[in-house]
Length: 69
Image 1 (tube, rainbow, N blue to C red):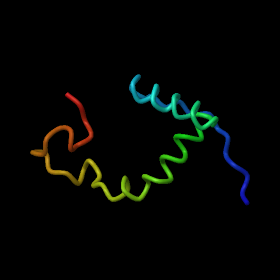
Image 2 (cartoon, rainbow, N blue to C red; image 1 turned 90 degrees about the vertical axis):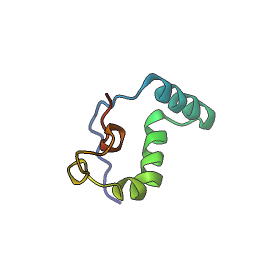
Image 3 (cartoon, helix red, strand yellow; image 1 turned 30 degrees about the horizontal axis):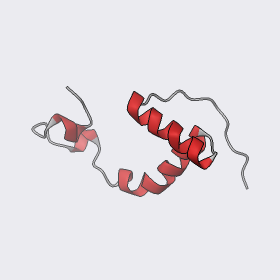
């Protein structure tokens, strides 16, 4: 198996989401990083099926374009 890449990366989460991640990490006795990695593995296919921002017409609501007002 390939050696894991252990570069540090800062990710920013809304406070409520980070609190939920921390709570789940404590519940499972796992790291927050592990929780986020598992979530990505399970959600990856669904996320990749979403259109890119440039593929969405400009008249779509802002939340559909991944932007907040």
